[in-house]
Length: 122
Image (tube, rainbow, N blue to C red; front, side, top):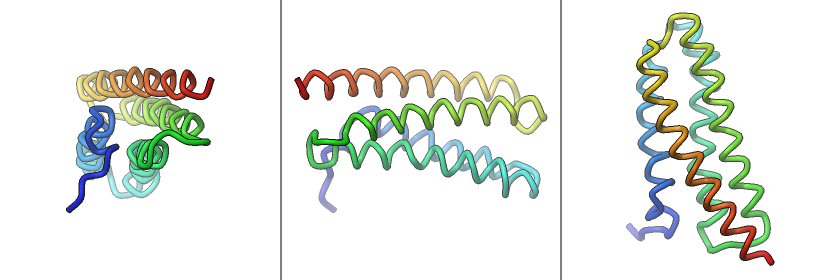
């Protein structure tokens, strides 16, 4: 299988690891919440590596910045949904903290990448 350039990026790899973990966590939700809250979280975490692939898969191009911003926005939405899951007892506070730490790392890397894209535009 040919490796794509974006798959070598640490932020893409981290987002894929978090995706795997969140799929596992949301799988433990009660059946009704698994279908509603769990599905929203899965959809959003899936957006992160997909947006990265679209933004950087074939080099920087028009729209890369917007796609990176969408990935960043998805991490904020995920954090909010996970806080809801914690407040309703579906996720333990220590699990939330560990996930938030990963989200923060991903957010930092997304911001750095977006700054590079913006500089390249000039």
